[in-house]
Amino acid sequence: MNFFRLLICALVLLLAPAEQSEASQFTPSVPVLGVENLRPGMKGYALTVVSGREIVRFPVEIVSVIPGKGSPKHLIMIKASGSVIAATGGIAAGMSGSPVYIDGKLIGAIGYGWNFSEHTLGLVTSFKDMASIWSWPEKTVSIPPAPALTEAEKKDREDDGRLDEETDTDKETKEEEDLIVPVGAEPLSSPLFIDGISTRKARETAALLGRDMYIPGGGFTDAVPVEMNAKMLPGDAITVLLAWGDVTIGATGTLTAVAPDGRFIAFAHPFLGRGAVNYPVARAYIHKVIPSLESPFKVGSPLQIVGTVTQDRPQGIGGRIGYFTPSISATLDFSDAERNIKERKRFHVVPDPFIGAKLTAGVFTGLIDDLWGRKGQGTATLTLNVQGRGLINGWTRTNMFFSDSDLAAAALKEASELLDVVFLNPFAEIYPLGITVTTEFSPLPKLMYIEGLNLKGESFSSGDTVEVDVLLRPYRKKQVKKTFKFTIPKDASGICEVLVRGGGIEPLNQSAIIQGWKTIDNFRQLFTEMSALETNNELILEFNYEKRSKGGKGRSNDDDPVSKEEQELLSELKQRRLKDGTLQIFKSDFVVEGLLRKLITVSPGDSSQSEESETES
Image 1 (cartoon, rainbow, N blue to C red):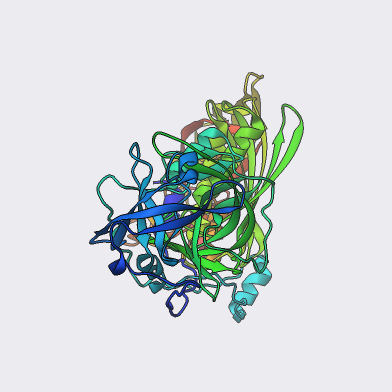
Image 2 (tube, helix red, strand yellow):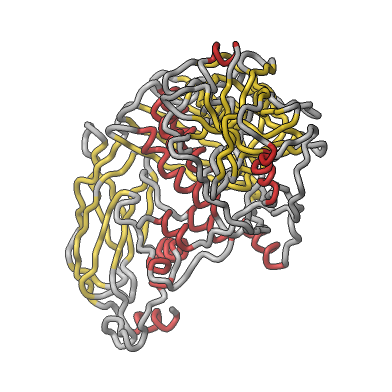
């Protein structure tokens, strides 16, 4: 189990936005007709957009009302007709949420259909079912003022100058119902579009979001502006956004109804089914409806953000027009050493801690794929910087990566794991959050191999200074020798080990967390432990030994069943060993590969000095 998993396992996942106190009844601005009043043969119409932004209507006829035992509780089978349906090839994906009216009264919205079948037949989710999404409370995102610091925290800030902490979390109080629909019927899944990243990462992103396919393209410009005081109408085309900017990820559907208080319902089926959410919703422009034997589908693009989706339930989605949630800002600064060019990409992602890290890292990887113009071997230097509330000066980590097959994926794997820890930490919601990745990519293998380890002698006394020659070979270049020195601790004796290795290869033991002696219990410590992680461009020299007891022999389990060293967190262990000289770390411009060790014999030095040293420790 790697350290990132240990961090996550050591933390309790408590992060959730603040819960709104009470749900209220949703009342649309038009009359409603309940399913109990519907009969086969009744005729009406539906509203949708099939080109541009123009809302059009097409005739529908009630075929039957199908009761269900899950959610939705009633589905209304309809048959669509008319010139609009003839032109589109039937009810299309993206028409989900299209309101259906009988005698001018809203009965619900189109939500389901059948693939490879008669596309004029569809299922309508009843209005009552759709409106029931408001029986769940929302979890709107707010940014409370920073709490007052205690005296201890003030001192910590003076010493460190970095971190502040704050948390206010609640859990969702109501379980989702199962989604049960007639056999063979499928949600008219609002077409997922992904634009701005490589094909392979787009496929992976679609899979992450539970989709088998996606539509390339979708964004008109690099930015999606905000439209204040938007007036939205039933039948308008809308897009729910997960990422926007130089990258666009979202899904297109139709607005069903708007209440006087600005709340709306749409889609008539779940988007991702994630319950209480905060996803921007935008006006959409429909380029065309594409006929298909499987199922016709709309191709659309977002125009202006008009509000936020706050409910993503089995019966549909809902949200608020005019309410805008803060987003996570992300920037990629990319350098190509081969072509000597630099480019910057910027995008925003939704504030969802449970998919945010994977979504963001996937976008970064997909952007690099496109900017580098290749997938393959090479070396990268990557700096991850996190800025946000609670991080006074931000947090930064730089590492080097080599891959012989897929450098972009290798370089972003660590960033994804680190961002998971940041997003899911239980101590403080880092919000608003800004993430910057700065990279330099080269097709060259910037590697350095450890080829030799030589000591001048095999037997030493405690307190001696030992010279260590390390033979290193940069990739396909001449071997070089580097000489290092360390002093053998006064409490060392017997068989001891001198070890030289690359960073991350057999890293320092983290037994304190593994064995349960300690855990990470505050925000500041979390980032301290992440900063203590080794990097791949480090050359690390260790002197490993077992301390002598006061009696001059090895440590006794009876006297000290668990050593202090075993109870140290990684940062504490590293700091102590750097101070006592048993650990030395040297940065390089290469990814360091290899590990070599030698055993030496150490005899006790001056006994009085040794005992004095042990007494002080």
